[in-house]
Amino acid sequence: MTLKQELATLLGPKGWLTEDVQAFQTDWLKLQSHAPLGVARPANTAEVSDVMRLAHRAGVPVTPQGGNTSLCAGAVPGAEGHIILSLSRMNEIEQIDPNGFTAIAGAGVVLAQLHDAVATRDLMFPMHLGAEGSAQIGGLIATNAGGSHALRYGMMQDLVLGLEVVLPDGRIWNGLRPLIKDNAGYQLRRLFCGSEGTLGVVTRAALRLFPAPVSRATALLCVDDAPGLVRLGGHLRQGLGEFISALEFFCDDGLTMALKHVSGLDYPLESRSAQYVLVELSTSAGAVDLDGLLEAALGEAFEAGLVTDGAVAANETQRAAMWKLREEMPEGQRLEGPQIKHDVSVPVAELGRFIDTTAKELQRILPGVRLNPFGHLGDGNIHFNLTPPEGMEGFGDCKETLSRLIYEAAEASGGSFAAEHGLGRNKCAYADWLRSPVELDLMVRIKATVDPGGMMNPGVIVPERKEQE
Ligand SMILES: Cc1cc2nc3c(=O)[nH]c(=O)nc-3n(C[C@H](O)[C@H](O)[C@H](O)COP(=O)(O)OP(=O)(O)OC[C@H]3O[C@@H](n4cnc5c(N)ncnc54)[C@H](O)[C@@H]3O)c2cc1C
Image 1 (cartoon, protein in one colour):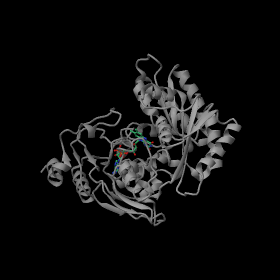
Image 2 (cartoon, helix red, strand yellow):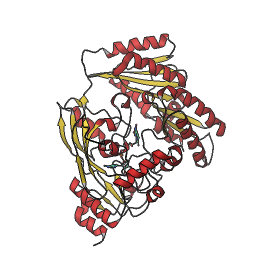
Image 3 (cartoon, protein in one colour):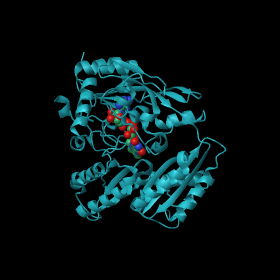
């Protein structure tokens, strides 16, 4: 039997697709698409193990796929004839423990599905991002997703307690222990967080939950300039401490594009400014007066000249409207036309200087380029996205120069050229020149140890050339 026939027999018509697979093979940004051998949709861990064993024996590469929302083409194969392994049928939430504050979820559980399920038990899973209606637990783990609440709750690696993983040869590692403290050797679960499908297939996860918030306070604030973002962020964190659950920022050019293109946006302030901060507090303790705390901190911020205008959301509708402004930054820019996206991070104290000096350099190289830096002020994560000057043709030809400039500037500031989206296929080559030989060597060795045949998502994280060296 051919591999195709074996997989068809093993998985049946629901679990092995060879037709109408365009949506699986094309990445979210529609930049990459290669026809696969087929799409495997196993229903349980045993079937994942069998798929991996058969693919391993036949020497056919496998790309695991969750919601396929990767912004760096990590979830689609880099060449024709590979297997796409979709986890979407493994979407069962097996357990929610309201006393231990843990859940056990299949890799294919969609993030919003988990939010809804735990909310019915007055619990919260604190990972929030724009793709939460599609992104799946396995994909979030494999990319070590960050999102807007990382400042308070950490990234996905901080929310994963235990994992079940199928290794490239089909063996199953059951590390599904719902423990905060588990120091029995190397932190294998952390190794798989951010491994982007290159070391194994995450099949189930034990996740950390928190009590659901009973109140929130949210404000949108005007700030004069990028260095002012850092000063305001520091002031708010000093005054409001652990109550801050999100501290986001965006700029006026991004706001202009969003207001121009996205319907249903409501800008609540009378004045505009160069930069904006969205701050949100939350608590699960009913006795805490969040509005009072926020107003006191904002009063001081106005007095110190850190804020020039601002509004506190008076109800849930206003709160949602403020968040929509922040969340529609990427959509507004997408609708404006071609763009080049960057996801970088710098130490928080450097964020203002980084934005200003990088903006100057970008303008020097390409006068009139429109800049839309926005993101997560609390953890220094900037989506430094660029739109061409009005009327310019051939913006794509400048990509390499502009991207290199941004990545080098981030690294020179003590930051990282890849913050929360990972490397995928798009950024893999940059690691060669932006990471030290020692760091690269460690990664190549880890890959070679866990996946000696280089069958798991080749071309992601470790360049294929290095895998073979
Ligand atoms: C509108 C939008 C907003 C976004 N906002 C954010 C944000 O704020 N923060 C952020 O961090 N990201 C963000 N992203 C990026 C993306 O949503 C995340 O990277 C997310 O974690 C991907 O989940 P997914 O299920 O779609 O994974 P996929 O895109 O399907 O896969 C991503 C990677 O994980 C691997 N993978 C998937 N499932 C498994 C598995 N079960 N086992 C092993 N490997 C697997 C894939 O091979 C691939 O390398 C955003 C994307 C969009 C489109």
